[in-house]
Image (cartoon, rainbow, N blue to C red; front, side, top):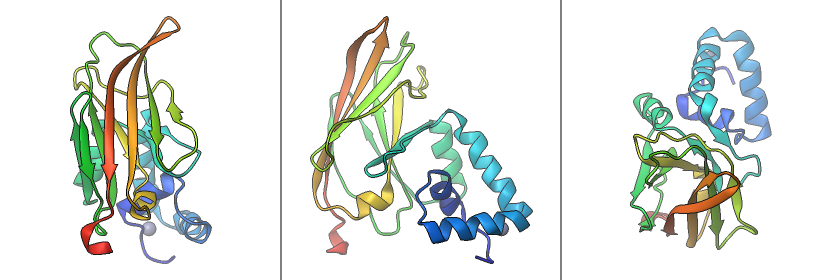
Length: 187
Ligand SMILES: [Zn+2]
């Protein structure tokens, strides 16, 4: 790769979602490019509190509202779904979308640790994210599904549960249902 990486590619790189050839090309490009190295450092700094999933597939991590705003202001096309507590939403993703976020609204006042459990009709067991970043004042937890994975999927249903963990016990703060359909023009 001799050209600079765009911000959305940097995000994918950081999440470890580029294929091996693209990853190698970008590794090599960084060695000689101060501009891209600086931008990757910017992504890494922003993402310091972000939980990444290393299992691949459906969900790639839990991010912060600040991360989403930075990504958006860098020109990345972000599609987001804000879901009320115990709510559900019909969702899709367009071919031109570059990042997908789910903003789960939950009462987080006084909560010290939040875990998120993701179950879906297309993955084997539930996927659990321990001690995720959240802003009690914002009252939301922001999940970032893998957009490449979602674009490749037929219709499916995902349920996310936000849990408060206290002294070894846990209680459900909210449950959020996403009914995904492929983009209308992609069929
Ligand atoms: Zn560059």
